[in-house]
Image (cartoon, rainbow, N blue to C red):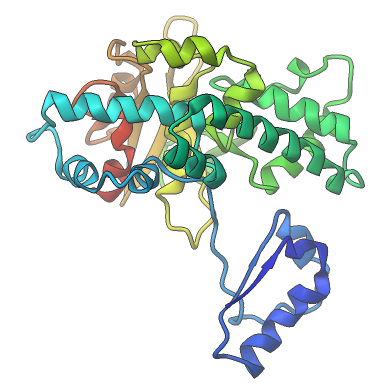
Length: 350
């Protein structure tokens, strides 16, 4: 197997892929890099049908459990549902693993460090190194946007997680155009993902988006926490997982878990719904398309929280059911199904 890393730095290497396919088909060739779309745009011919694309993300929570060799726990989780909830001891064990995953995230280097050392503070030092390296890499894109502006937008994504992204929150005195360009680069690099507002009046969801109304999440919970500068020493000793849900981590985690469980051959896209009315303001965190139906998803950091927005959406959009994601065990309340935060992959499979 031949592996080209950071292939975007060498367009000639990208051009060579089609010839490997034609003249040495027995050789497996893999190329990886950021902003490949920019590099591909400068190649006259990519060799249609000869290059197969896959979209990669940090480890999902299931992959984190696999790294910990929790095979039996994964199987129990995958087989659980509202009629067959998990025994409390296993439910709590998964929450404990989830707490750690929130702290360290899914970057392979960090997961490996935790598997070997079980030292969260050691993982945090490596997360800090990775975060600073990512920011240093912004110099690669300085022809398109100044490094400092990229850093400002990157940090602002973490600060604005959970709400509509506003360029004015970065710097109200600067032109939004330049921040828009910087955000576009960060998203195209796979460091962050947009969640577009959709009117959700029909399928497909992407046909009814408001292009200027969106949220943004970073690609990893560990990096998100590092950017926010949260006090890890307090979090590590906390017994209540709600303590570590600062910065809308549950919403970020849910969005990334949905993306990680999409078809890797397609670029995933996230959507949410928001209705602004004086007498009835409502918001649903995520929308899923199941066949010709739209399924609303609400995310709760703990075990409490009303579902008024979801019920409004179900009634107005004739959704067959809704999904509530929280720290509760698997359960059902009428046409609303509760899935634990650690079991988001179950939703996509079923």
